[in-house]
Image (cartoon, rainbow, N blue to C red; front, side, top):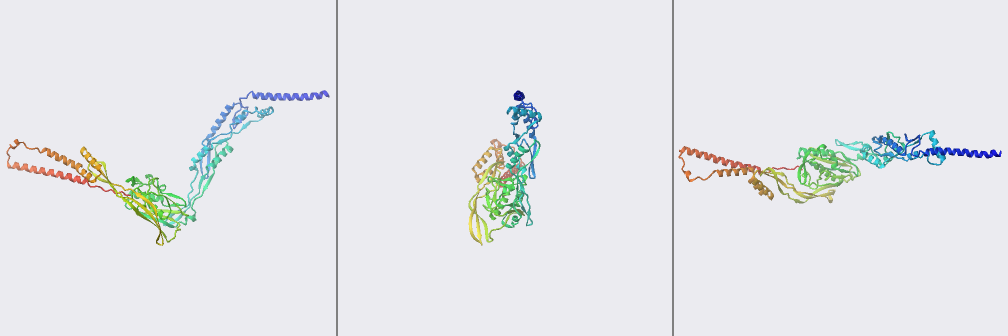
Length: 552
């Protein structure tokens, strides 16, 4: 019995030694293959068993790259866009799984290593692939495509028909929250994406339309009105006035909103319904698309100031216009000169613009809150004047011809006064604006084209003096007709030479021959005198200037 008890512990130790030896042998077998991943190991659906870490990394990266062409529908309410995973900056996040796969059976104590090896004999070891996005790239993409995802709200509005207002219902708008939507996209890829095409909902805010029916129904009163006459305009200018007025007509401006005339009527191009007509440019009149729209902005300006809305931007013309008094105009010149104003009332306003015959009308409708016994007037005052000069410009027209190419404009400095009366008595008089209008010269073109260099030099020298009497005298002396007349006289003078003494010995002729010679000479003299008169008439015709009045 004692012997038996002593043998039993020895046997247990022996079995333990044998087990440890087996584990050690198995572990050492794996350690001999440190450079490769054990069999039955997957990263995603990629079998990486038997691969080196570098090979596994490359294999998984290739599989991830192939998934970058997957497409996703981004939804924002009724709007949606399609985008690829690549465009959103999607990438493989948990690259450390390859290191974990390599370490199977190689880390921990001997028992743990042995267990990991035995587990692989029973089932595959699968590591999931995690994804991440480049947040900055996603934000940039969303900002670039907000126009496709957002929907502008359309405010409730009014339409004036047969002197009555009709309510027009608008609709809601959609505006995506770019930052929150980028977070939605990141969460989808980090938690839900399986590598296939998908759909992602973005975070969007609903934009309610402005202007309730109750607000808009308060628009009934005329707050300011003004009219101007364009009956002397050319067909092109008439078309431009009507087109610009129609683009402004029907505008509803809510409290606090600013209105830009150029934004409403521009661009001033043929594609936007405009034609060529007279306009001011650098102190001269030129043909320009949209010529005449300044009368539209000017008429609207006068209606707005009578409604006592805030003018935030206004420019005078470079030269005086004929359809309003000085300082009552408002010029439009692209974005350089514009008319802007703000609705400073607590209620919306409605802008009506139309033409009746050749009279342009603008009315500002709203809710009248000013006292009925209070009136507002605007008075123009001319502070100073500047007379225009006369300017002569050399052209390639026939020498000596003089034609007027631009009418003069007087220069002025002016002020506009705002006068408030209560019960007909003046309560205040304030300077509302001040304006400076340049004078522009009466311009004449003077022809200098001639084959005669003396004539060209003489006429250019006269133009250099800018003295009208000197220039007109030179033009009369050196025009083509005058030159031709002088040349003919010189030729005749050269043909009449003195007779020699021997010439007195002539053959005698009968009286009838002498009479014929005398008659022929008389006819020749008459012809010479007729040629000179014709030259004078031509010269006088060229001296008459041609009037050309600009429309603006």
